[in-house]
Length: 66
Image (cartoon, rainbow, N blue to C red; front, side):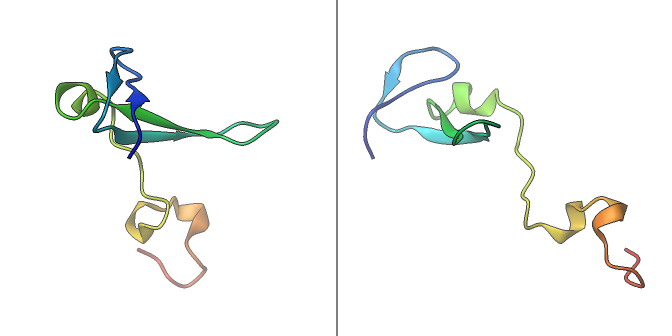
């Protein structure tokens, strides 16, 4: 992987960890990188959009109560 700038400490890292995916209304989003370890651990864990256990009740098909 190429060198990326850490979103927490603003230093370049040659072993970046993806900590978030940014979304934009008017254009494409971007990937947010951090240094492995302390910097990456300081970001909140992102919700997995494919984890069906994390779906709000409005997204559960009728008749399939959790």
